[in-house]
Figure 1 (tube, rainbow, N blue to C red):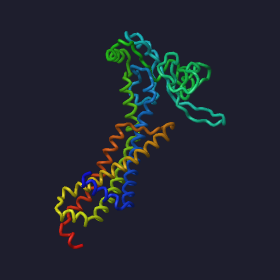
Figure 2: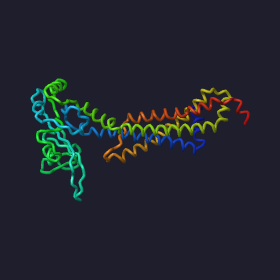
Figure 3: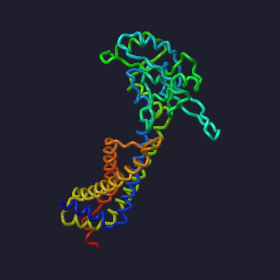
Figure 4: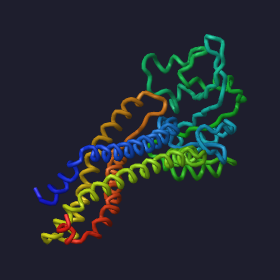
Length: 336
């Protein structure tokens, strides 16, 4: 094992209380960033859930629609114009809106209603625990938060002949780009988006148009700042405590570059240990929130980015310690 690593290891673990403080600072910072970014990804997925689980090849919507939950209306006669285009297999109306739900206690609570033609299968429940989708055709049947399109019109007050969206499904050999252009030409005051475009528009609106994304990023930035300050202060104090040892290394011929390596290795060791503990804590949080309305989502790419962030944060924090070491004079060892 390289001597530089051994020195760094012994320096780091010499004062265990200070080392524990360093690790706690790293874990706190990375867990906070993990939760904030996990909420960001989880929220981003949540707001596009309906789009992700639809069978749409194209979405026809009123011009200016900001997100899936934007309850603007268009005429369902546009459905027949879509069906008249060669290559269109089906055009399915979807109605969304808000209604009041009366609970057994008599209290009322607002609910978001989604209605679709259940026989066409354009948008329907996808995670049934028990029962059958066909049961939703029964009178007054609801699967949170889905129901038949006609019943949805009744509960949300949407007039007959109106819909929020038209889901367009194409034949397997159809040219989606050509059909999209024809839809935009034949139908006025509408937009025709691919699922990817509609997904990105909805996600952008909720994350940035409402300020939710900025709040999550601010929390993540706070975690990085706090962690960097704690780690920098601890590494600086540890280096200052070992100035005589570093002076000894200088006196026996070690270069400043060699000493810098020792300090950076201390930072890397702190980063690896702290990140490992933070990853375990993050995994526990993911498991605890898996069944909630807003689960925390951690992807492999996010974990790789967080590890790189931890290394940068710890190595960057070591700069204060390196500056202190640059002032060491080898003769200092003889004044002890």
